[in-house]
Length: 485
Image (cartoon, rainbow, N blue to C red):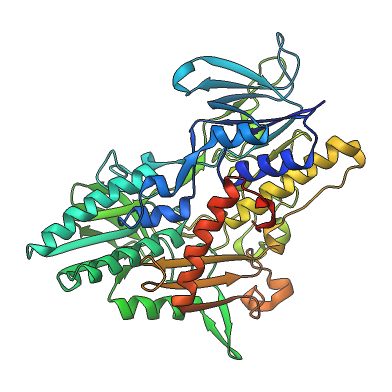
């Protein structure tokens, strides 16, 4: 009998738990530790943030699903890893602090044979003074944040209807943010709502980002193959901004968010300020606050985790200039560099470098989009890690090791505005591979036959369909596993 513990129940962790439970017998334990009681389909938080959905439509309770599937669930926050055990508990274990109301604050230790770190990111609002719902801006990173953002947005719409001119600022709240796609999508959902409410003409919509160009998305941009031609994602995205009358502040690091005003620096050293009546600014990510200790109680956190708090895995972390970055630097198995029974899935693994070229202002401010690895890649990685562990449980060291390199993986992103089957539009983009491979695909770094973008109602239909499909899959309904990650 074996015991696999999965820390985190987001896309990667939940996917890993369900697949692993399906692949191994009930004599083996699958255990999930997560601080929240609900699962959240985060891409649809965008719709919550403009009032087109509510929290109940994008979340569901985890415990009933895990009971039904035979997964042990602990609503708790993991705080310490003891991969070698300790003096009083020789087996590897995780120290947790329970967030379950019935055991609030209680500290426990959960033993494991195999461990998946799928803790996701810490929303690092503290990186920028005044950033976040407890400061002077809003967020859509959680369903609760998105509801708060929508309430503030509706107040702005009310003022617009009274004839007051309003400025709405949306984008990145720090020079090192990721998830530019989410900010892009929220921008155009807000713009769509303003048009629907008949108040667009009295509103200034401004996008602020650390990207060097529109369409970079933290992925070094893309080149879309379309009708025998190649169109850059920059040209594709710029056309949307022009059509919708959205202004953009590029290559910017937000340094401070005051009430009604942000201060920022651009990569050329220019200092600027932008007033706003409503601001939704995403935070940078870092790893959650996990410490690691060896059997003697020595702190080995720096050996297990990178300085940004994400777990070090089978990647090439050798410092090297941008020109020497390779697709082969990226991990394939996601196994810990120090322990062969520990893996990191989804956002929890430390990337070896960014995808887009990092830039630094003359003042030393780093303005560099962090590499995105949410959504589809997280699910694919979670499944691959679960498959590897299932093989190890069944066949020991001879079990097949499954891989999921982002340098050999494609992904799709659909940024939709509006909701329903007849009204709405979306920009759909696919990319292959996610990590640019210039050795294989030349200067573009990607296969232009598999990398493309389009705008229209059909892409919007796909976004709506995906919302319902992935909620069905996450609830582990009949034949859920047939739906791809």
